[in-house]
Image 1: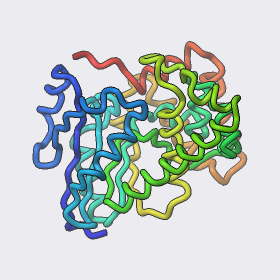
Image 2: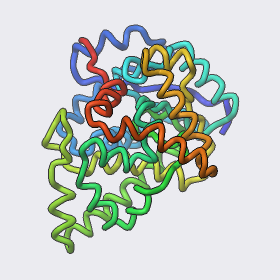
Image 3: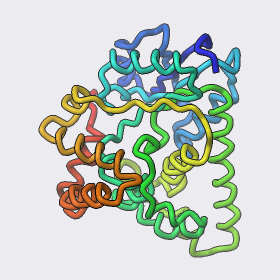
Length: 290
């Protein structure tokens, strides 16, 4: 990919109260995207990704297109200037994709997105992923960078196309399995226990975790934004030091059993204490005052 391609980031909104949050963004890069058409979608971000490809705003294969939510600055805590500097750096490196993960504390605390999903209440994953022959992933320590949750992605057309095909493939496999396996069907289409909307079944949350699998099985040049000391301090306050330690230990323990043991010891008092863990969940997903 060339660094000379166009860059545009679509910022999705669906309610007028969200639009003021877009005013602080550089309109040469960020483009408001009214996604009220997606209000009844059962698959959330995936249908936005499909819509992006359907509209095909890419003029060349070098163009980078992003999909962010209206609250990305406040949810991620990323300093605006740092974000723009990292995007510029990534373009100089001629990357295929740039990924901003807002769930920094969750990333630091859990081995992978599937373990995190079960911990935060999507208990059906204990049935869903083994039946999809992906159960072993819940026990794997995956690279800290690839913990993504289908959050904020900027990518070229090839990356977007491959990602959507990958996600659609697993949705198709799951739909076919649901026709022959009654236990899988019952769990897969049951409420995933999402605290903001109990009507959502396990599909959109499975999709979120499959993005991490995609990033670990595809050979793309991806630039991940790593949290800085200033970023962590602004986002987590007095919890910044423990999040930083966990994040660093997870990064370096991938091939080091001693450091892995230390990471597990440091995280244990948090993940084994529901009130403490809930506090970290809320730090990553704060309520945004409108």
